Amino acid sequence: DIQMTQSPSSLSASVGDRVTITCRASQSISNYLNWYQEKPGTAPKLLIYAASSLQSGVPPRFSGSGSGTDFTLTISSLQPEDFATYYCQQSYSAPCTFGQGTKLEIK
Amino acid sequence: EVQLVESGGGLVQPGGSLRISCAASGFTFNGYWMHWVRQAPGKGLVWVSRINGDGSGTNYADSVKGRFTISRDSAKNTLYLQLNSLRAEDTAVYFCAREADYGANDYWGQGTLVTVSS
Image 1 (cartoon, rainbow over the protein chains, first blue to last red):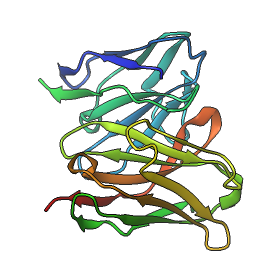
Image 2: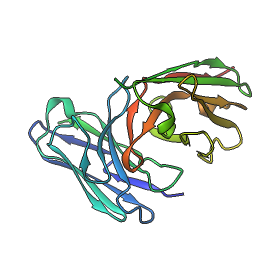
Image 3: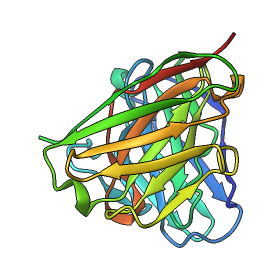
Image 4: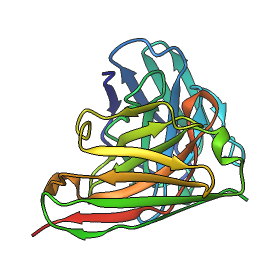
């Protein structure tokens, strides 16, 4: 099975900050990497698919990059509604494993 | 509008069984792979299972293999997950999700809570 490791596990930042979250796969997954945002009591929301493609309706302050084993999610200027937990997921092969999550908190 | 609505969750004793459902609407159901993902209280997302459009292909996480069975009924536009030999560690909110480009899950249901406890 492919293991996904996110860092950091938690992050404190302020509105307007630029934030980067990283995700590493235990083997090459090409660009089969997705990013989700999760807020308590709501379903996860797809932000980025295929490592760098912005899902329809997602603000352009979100961006993704990477290929192979190393990936990043960047939020260019944090907004109050961005404080949430973020997960990466590989969809290269089943089981379609998630990272452990990164909780983004207000500083 | 794409909608996924889960149902069937509840309290079940260890060793018991439950079938949860996901009613789909707003898209051509048999044209998409469908997934189940779960989230234990206060924990992260864990992928559980997926099934292809005609139901002929399935995959499972090792933690549920042999205990859970994913299936679908195209006539009812409904996805199912049969949960057998339930354990306390299976307690979670179970989400169904549609698979889109590059295997990403673009639409999710609101989840149904399964609690395994005596």
